[in-house]
Image (cartoon, rainbow, N blue to C red; front, side, top):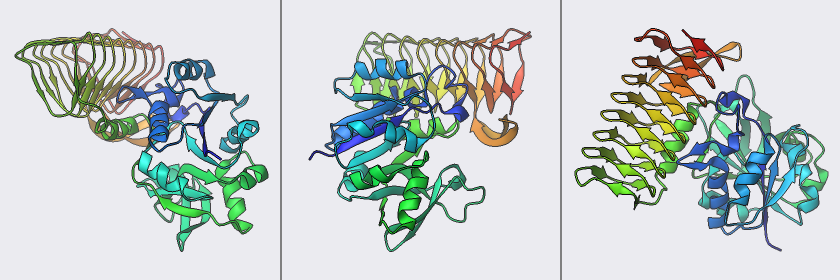
Length: 388
């Protein structure tokens, strides 16, 4: 029987706000593809083509995107977002036998999927410097002996990647809404769950984590030069340029970097490594970008400097604006969270000239219209705020 895969893509990703206010986490573009598409491509490369996707939050968006893919996938709806175990059970009627279960908002490489596919009743694990954000696992003799979901104080750095190879027997016995708790129950009842080390895994808990994921995934892009490229432009390293894009004179692009379709870049723009630029983006002369994600339909005016930032769809950035990568703490969900970024902007932000951002989150549809030379540092600006 062919091994199936179930991708859990029903979640919202609240800690990634403002980027998930208008889209589910699985559809956030990284290296110019939604995260879930990277997951599907890894499955296909690993030889698994029978794929079920469980959708929930903003399900219509996910379904529309999946319908455009060349590989057909089966869609299952989770009516209420009640946890990963509940999401898996939503697909129970479509599951024919053993399955690989994966989160739709993480990246996992094809080699790791192949490895776990060869080990029934197993879990992928890795190490992480912030283990309390994940399920912390204890391993003895190459078997998982315990899973503790998001402990306040983690006594080890080995964490679950949320990727499982489960037998049909285990799936039939799942009763809890949290999948890691169901597997921990299985372990206590004597089921052996093998520990398989992941080769390459990336998750984004907070928006600035997307920059690390983006940098990793850019190393896998195909080198491509389409559009109209000036003879005086300099393009070095692994760079992909989409059709209809114009690269102006004196522009320097250093890979890994990707630029989508129908963009206008330059003249005299500098794009440094780790940068993803979506489609229909305009970057005006003498601006520089580094280690950033620029989504579709963004305008960045002249003489801007953008570093370590995520800029949402349809933003307009005025000239002489700087987003300066800096670490510190940002107020987040009534707490202070350690962060490191220039600016994280939601969709439709308008920013007048000569503004500086350091380690700042800017909500959706924020308009910054006040006096030039404003500086925002280690702060969060709520959705639809007007700065006068």
